[in-house]
Length: 478
Ligand SMILES: [Zn+2]
Ligand SMILES: [Zn+2]
Image (cartoon, rainbow, N blue to C red; front, side, top):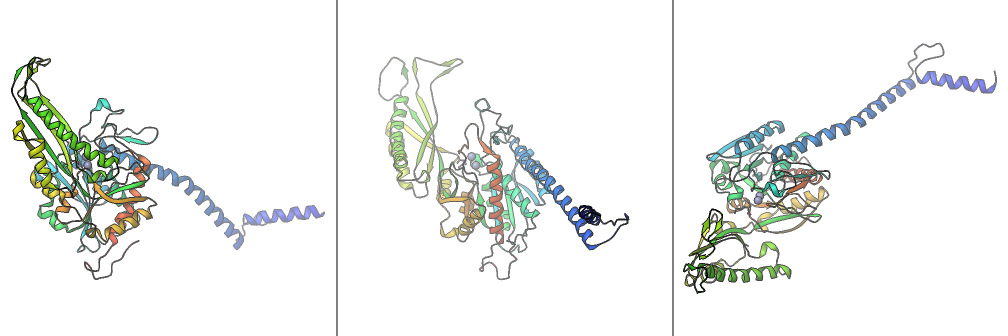
């Protein structure tokens, strides 16, 4: 036998051994061959898993997107929101996530839905995650896609009324909880996810009715999260107070007359005198913004939302008649620090003085609401939650801006008015703020990152045990 033949034989023997066979073809159970067999099996298992995992992840991703789209497709715009469909949708989601579901009509046909995950230490004050189910109307002819189609474009942007305000947030809460459950997390505090109606029309019959109920009291809410605003930058916006919304109507009366006649004290002249004073005040506030002396939540904004006057005909207006009445509607936003006495005086004496035949009324936001919404959670009330929140967002590899005053209103004002600290935070960064605008959208990747952020927040808040509230050891499932 030559050297090369001998080597060849040895190699063949090794190969047979590898497959557990000797030269006679009988099975030989050597520990080496068993090891290799197991290694092969393991390799097969890993390859199969590696092939299947992305398929499962893609299916899960699709399911997450579908749930958001389904919610966005429910028509909940005022004046005719379909709260019945929303209730059915949310109650069925509660079952799939494994949450206890309750629904109350504190006001008929305006359901408040509450989905709860009971904590291991239910005596601890609970965490409330709030969003609203209603949306503002949308002019479909001004949108690229139908505002209730929830169309996803090639870049992954999902268009829909409510995609920022606030259907995405409601779904992110539930997706985060779904994931935490899958990870085996056990909250120490109970977590309640509320879906309330009518926020966009003042919230009186929604959160307003809910916070004054016995059912709400029984929840013993210690900390709440509500809607924030998208940030066009890399860091998220976060709010701890908000401006209150006043809805002012100014009416002018004046002498009617022929369209050709020039005279003083026409209704339009009186209204325009008022508008000039208002617009010069408005300019002073814009200047504070321009010069960066104040942030948007720190100035008083006033904007016209309608103007009405004239004598209508079936095809337009009578064109040679000066009307005896003219009216303007305004949206005013008032920061908590504003001198309310001064604003009242301004309205009475400068914007709608009786001497110019002007009168004013308020709609939707009543004087009580002004008192209510100017009360904010102080920075002190927000400890330890603010520290926990910052850490949670950091853990999710995202960044958070400073705590500031939100320019527009939310239902959090009802909670703060009950003494409950509340943050307004929607995890939407690198996103233009398009709430109430045409073509409201949210990118799906940003939406999914937001779920991870809320996972960390819920984990941190629900695990936190204040020694004052609680003197037994809490199992914190970090
Ligand atoms: Zn909103
Ligand atoms: Zn809104």
